[in-house]
Length: 211
Image (cartoon, rainbow, N blue to C red):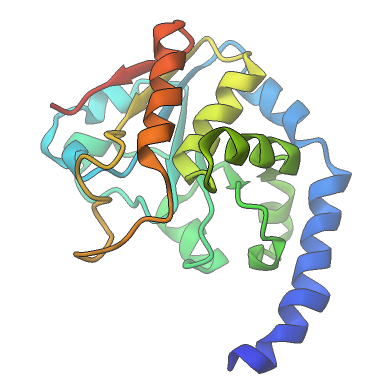
């Protein structure tokens, strides 16, 4: 389908439908209860993670969040389970469900034309990141936030998890393991690192480093 022919569906159907879903359900309230009192693990996609043996440690958490195309390729390093996955428009609904088999889908980005889930259960189990929080993240960073940053920011802001632990986050020191060589990131990892390290210093999160 060409970009021109896809335009009406994306902007006149998918985007309005996505915004209606986003604005008519209280995703924060649902997320707050899902993670209340739980140990939460957010697994980033830094290539450096793949050389570790953190898999069993990751799987020991109550809630495991993965991101984008962060499929498990090395279970000994990444663990095996996925409870939530941050969505990417590069994957179809069927691909996302099959490769991750999560309990919840997280629509973190604000471009609702990219929300192309239609299965009743999958739509019911999609949680949407509030636009005002995305905007706040962007204003603090000075550039649009990465999916990893938004997942961390969401957990920190809600404040109901027993613990928040990060694996596979090195803020650009090594590339995202599935990106092609020479990929140019649109994100400001230096600024994201500064903010996340501030949360670590405050004791709000724990970062397990790969090296």
